[in-house]
Length: 189
Image (cartoon, rainbow, N blue to C red):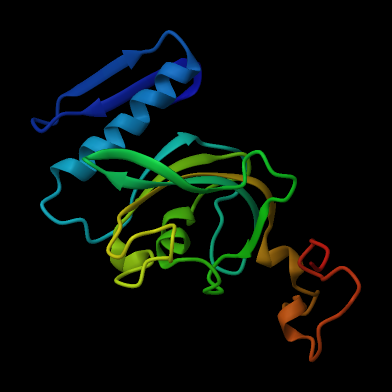
């Protein structure tokens, strides 16, 4: 889906189609349903499926970049969205993470690559790239496929943290945790 609620796609005969939606909400809802349809039509979901809902601006994020993210997570049940199991959308704090650090599920690490600041993306994550056979007690049953809507609110590119000699001066290089704001651009929790 592009600017002005306009969408283009190719069918299985490589014929180009275009759709114009009445509103941004209708365009976003369509994009989510396309992602769910892709999931339901795959015999086995082995990798993260994603669909951009809003592209955002600037450079695409990559490993080492620090992000602040708003998200909602649902269980994928009965071929569609099940119950919400986690969200920080109506909370004061955004989730802070460094992409590639292994602090979030692998499906997030893969699914968020290339997103831009202000971008929103829909992710459908297979169990092997989520919580696997363990699940999360009381919240995520074992072997659950998960759906997330993620939005990057702030980005600090890893490249912006390097000194003039090209060496990284990010907080992970300091020997001890510092009580002052870390050099990745976000204050320490």
